[in-house]
Image (cartoon, rainbow over all chains, first blue to last red):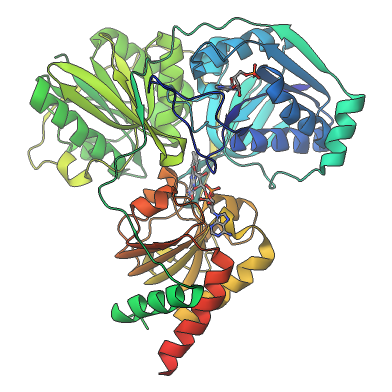
Length: 254
Length: 323
Ligand SMILES: Cc1cc2nc3c(=O)[nH]c(=O)nc-3n(C[C@H](O)[C@H](O)[C@H](O)COP(=O)(O)OP(=O)(O)OC[C@H]3O[C@@H](n4cnc5c(N)ncnc54)[C@H](O)[C@@H]3O)c2cc1C
Ligand SMILES: Nc1ncnc2c1ncn2[C@@H]1O[C@H](COP(=O)(O)O)[C@@H](O)[C@H]1O
């Protein structure tokens, strides 16, 4: 049995998210890119399934060499094979429809039984990769997943609803699942183990095409104009703490 | 302007608030650009659900294969309806159900899809989307094409009460199209059990986010909560780590809170979190990033380290209480 996990990099939200000169997209060079946190959960879920059932785990990224760190980190956690589809995102405004089509090609070659991917990516506004990919592949899809078990030729999954409600569903394989959290939190691997994986492992490179047709055209990108903004308290730590205590007291709460 | 369809999401006999928000959005577009608002209601024994939907027409499809949501039959029925009726727009809530359906239909029918949509603006007969992305830090806008566009709308801009009516609209039944056997079966709905606390009823809540960094620091936040006479709750990354129980999750997948005081420690203010804290009477945020979106909704804030502030605040509160 084989699992393919498509992953992607997203802007690090803790850093400044720089908008391009034309004000219609991201400044790809100025942005700090990190692995999409939900893809990190998808990788973890794949590794957990490997530990339980011995499935083969293949992790796929698209773009340039920037994704290699994320790929080798997955290898250090236990992924069996790494694939990178070489496409140049620097000249094109890549969208999730285009990424899903790139992954579709690889998945048709790999013929996995299960595809796990992050439930969403915060920089993509044309749908979740998994939902799109499933339809391109003619497979069933379930998103918002927080647990997966494989039983014979089906998967038993937990789908999240608001308020902590979950639906247990059975889906015939092959299927695509959009992971929002892995059964256990993503494990930490020391950088030395990632370096080791870089030395001993390898990334299989493939060519790919970018087909932007399914996405949306953005003509304006900006930071929100805020109506209200918090009053930022100033002074020493003690001043600020005293002020907060005062505010809480004035609300009659202490 | 052609028709604006809204997908009616319901769970255990109750229409979700997000559906009324979608109807409010649809009504606003209809008001400026014309066109009818049509609610699309799929399920089984759903007659009573249509009574307060603010729409010109309701299309219902009732069948026992639609009694509970699973992707295959729902996507098949909606695909047929969209192809038949060719609405200008079909709005879904940005939810566990809405995002599965809208994503799949976009790929199946080759229709454009706007996710993380904050608002569709009607401007001189044209429609523009506004998507709120990157955890609330960035807005992206563009024109919608002249075909059926799919949208998953996030809560925030529209009020549920504006999507309700007292006059029941015209209901037309749509017959179930033929579809292949579902590849997905619902086994069980699991309700949360063993809740240690109902945070939706608490008056003082201290929310901890990824900024808390490690489990050891949770005890400091707990000390602060005790000093304030409040309880701890958290954003998703903290719950995913297992540092607090799932019943204390605030946000899209968790609970909505409406305390008198919400002290947010190390929470960035992503839309999935913010949608569930907006009814708090007062929000005070501690976040080292001055650009963090949480400051757009908080009344007071500080960019000091949450650990330093927590320690100092425990002292200040004890002083205020003592004196
Ligand atoms: C389908 C789906 C459902 C979701 N459901 C939910 C949900 O129910 N609830 C929820 O919360 N999220 C939910 N999310 C996740 C959401 O998108 C965000 O990822 C999450 O809210 C971020 O949590 P955070 O603010 O704690 O972490 P981050 O966004 O990582 O923010 C941490 C913040 O801490 C600050 N910080 C760091 N160190 C310090 C310090 N020492 N002192 C002070 N500040 C510090 C940083 O500046 C940063 O702003 C969902 C996402 C999806 C896709
Ligand atoms: N998923 C993605 N979406 C948008 N841009 C990306 C993505 N992945 C990588 N990039 C950026 O696109 C540019 C080209 O990537 P590279 O070929 O790796 O240098 C770099 O700025 C990357 O960081």
